Image 1 (cartoon, rainbow, N blue to C red):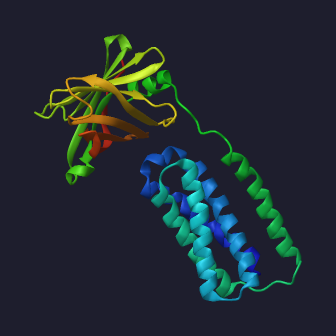
Image 2: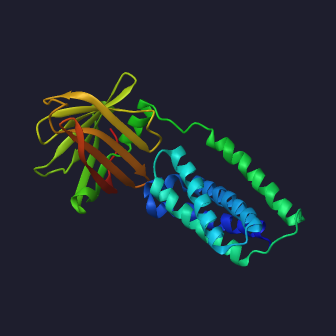
Image 3: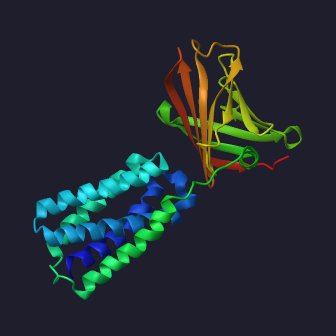
Length: 293
């Protein structure tokens, strides 16, 4: 099989596994796995055709591997940059894909005649795939508003158990309760312990706000950042509070909730002296559901 076609096919096949790797490296993306696999397959096809044409021009195994690494890493970086996150999770398998395709195409692909039908078909297929991929890249990511985010929080009602990553995997638990006629969601962290703290979520006009009742005695307040949030991924930014000086005192400054089916990642960032000093990340799984009220 000639090199451009070989690279195209191998890149597409490996692209499927590249996309599926997200289930391991970023399990919170599980609800979007179909789209991720499709995008990774297109990315693999793009890398494969580029590597294939390079291999046809340059008959060198070391240079083929190096070119594959560069192409795979650059395409993966482009995808991660559009996402604004998951750089390692996207770039590592993308780079490995490029190395494998670069090696295999040089090793097992054959040099086609210039302008051969199979090479032309491979090029036309690659162009056909690039067009919709470019169109999707220009689409604005899905956004969430305060009301839809609040409904997502109501759906968390019940018990969640798991571990705290920043505490060497110590057990962690949270409960969510919908109360006040459906106008308030209470999140209890470390419920029933001396470390219990409460986050109270509520709508204020067109904003979703949360007050953190902290064990240190202060009450920082945060609000949903719609620009950084998306369905199933809610980002909260600092919005003031009482009982502390934000420029000097220790306090919870920001939060993020990522929901993927029956799994929840709850992350909270701490500030002290006006600077970030650490964070706590809860990796939780639904233990028991309770009806929203």
